[in-house]
Image (cartoon, rainbow, N blue to C red; front, side):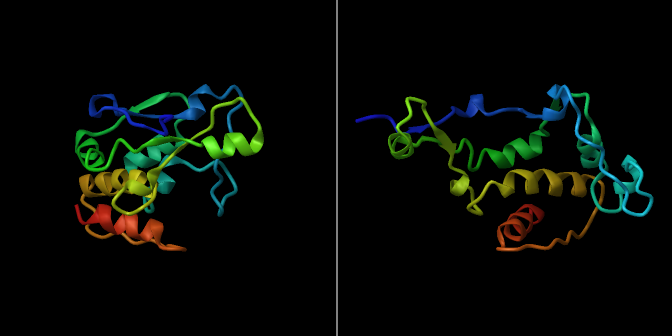
Length: 151
């Protein structure tokens, strides 16, 4: 039987977030302030996001950001999530390439959105924010933020 699922050991789970912008030879156009139509300044985002998240969002030079230990501790409840080999898709496409997908449905909220929600709730709590609010479409983001905010 061919191996279908692959897992990282707990000690292999990443301890840093990767910032792809640092490796892009052509940087994306800057986010614009809708009122001024000028590149947004970090402090203009403070009413909406935690300061550390604003810094990370606008940073185009640093490749790695350390994941706070408190966030890593929460990640350990459901990570590592399996990397699954898509043998059926490979066969249907007639490709010799190996195709994999990351199965994030095993998280407590059933999607990858908890990965971000935990970090956002952590930084908000660290800044003394007492309440968070959001919109949600199908409910995955709202569920993830609700789960994260209760911690």
